[in-house]
Amino acid sequence: MANKVLAILEQRDGNLKKISLEVSKTASDLAGKLNIEAEAVVIGNEIADLVNVGSYGIKKVTHIKNADLGNYSTSAYTELVSNFIDETGADIILFGNTALGKDLAPHVAVKVNAGIGVDCTNLDVSDGEIIATRPVYAGKALVNIKVNSDKKVFTLRPNVFNAGEPSGETAEVEVKNVDSVNLSIKVTETKKSEGKLDVAEASIIVSGGRGMKGPEHFDIVEELADLLGAAVGASRAAVDAGWRPHSEQVGQTGKTVSPNLYIALGISGAIQHLAGMRSSKYIVAVNKDPDAPIFGVADYGITGDVFEVVPAMIEEIKKIKS
Amino acid sequence: MKIVVCVNHVPDTATKVKVGADGKTIDPAGVTYVVNPYDEYAIEEALKTKEKFGGEVVVVSLGGDSNKESIRKALAMGADSAVLLKNDSYRDSMSVAKALAEEIKNQGAEIVFFGKQSVDYDNSITGQITAEMLGYNCITVVVELSIEGDKVIAEREIEGGKEVVETKLPVVITAQKGLNEPRYASLKGIMAAKRKTIEEKDAVQSESFVEVVEMKKPVPKQAGKILGSDASAVPELVRLLREEAKVI
Image (cartoon, rainbow over all chains, first blue to last red; front, side, top):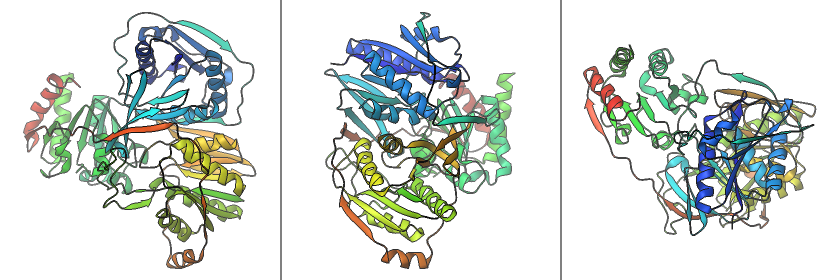
């Protein structure tokens, strides 16, 4: 029998990330199905509006606090989260599958002797057992897994679990100040890509491929992305050609994404690219070649020249925005 | 400096995945296996580290006899020797890491390189687990690395930017694309690799917590509407995105 579900929340610059609401809601739903309690923990310095996680089913959140904990530290966070798991007796532990969660969760799993299932897109309960579904081979296949250890760690793919509408309830916040933290692994600086949304976090992505014909033509991709509040993505062909940075690459050797809207411009749809974006909720493709595989997964397609169609899209969206 | 690089042997990213007869793994028929793409960056960084500080690069790989193809490739690129931890049955990442950690301890490695993830199960956790089991420091998804004395400074990729991370040896580094440009094996390297030894031993047994119940193909997405072949289709596209999909 499971004992308690613990949601590990994540803050950046003192604000909770969106994934934390998804993890909160999923933890509270899962606890409901198992008829047990859920609570949450977050590590950081000053953190705004923690009471709001009450809106996503969490009754109590513990804030482990120290001036040196504002930035992530693998060593400090591992120790503090692992100790907290021991203190609370939690045995089902949920993280977001983010840069931080992916780094931290396996360390914690070893410390608390838990099995770990990562990048889950669904958590189900069947006969009191948790069955997690997750994509493998970059989404070319799915597996259902069980974790057969007393303590279980799962990480949740961002933007897949629905946090739902806030209920308006508030959570009890307990602040636990810690005196000293283990900074043997320490973040000394964070370099932000100025004003850019990351494909892994965006709800709309506008991606360009080989059909953009050169780095100088990505200005229209960027303009369309800006208008839509979207992140710019790229195919492997565009990245390997040196047109775009690898951080924008979508596909099997880049990022696997599930935005609400994915707009593929001049992308033919190689199998490794489709694997990385096929779980997007809506897909738009613009490509001259009507036989391009991208049209096999697109909800809406235009078999035309990107250099005519994209400027027209920019004009049309400007029109409706004004 | 003793350097270990862990190398995995995985289906090529162009593989069309079919579910195997057991319903839990892929059908290996017709699949081409290659060095895990991210491990190539790990191998390159291991070689560069050796070139800078001297020492030895040992390849460690867990799997069946076919892993020797990927091991030979790493040896041809310039690694000095290799250990194949023989294993033919399913293991989860925790169990893989246990066997790797045991061997890394035997080797007395000061720095260990992994690819940031294998492109089969996409777990991206084996490096971290191995580090935690060894009590080594660990930095993941690294795109830039420098080592001075026992001080390690790395840049790791995060959402919308990078973090500069500082720690000390011994350390496990997981490599991201962009860390370096992996070299091609020279003919001389390929010839030399044939003479290098691959030590074979049984991988230490341990329990796997994660059990695969079922593997399935995702529900195929239905092809949608082609709205036209030029810019005149754009107003309809934008209307559908607003009114039908409600995503803009």
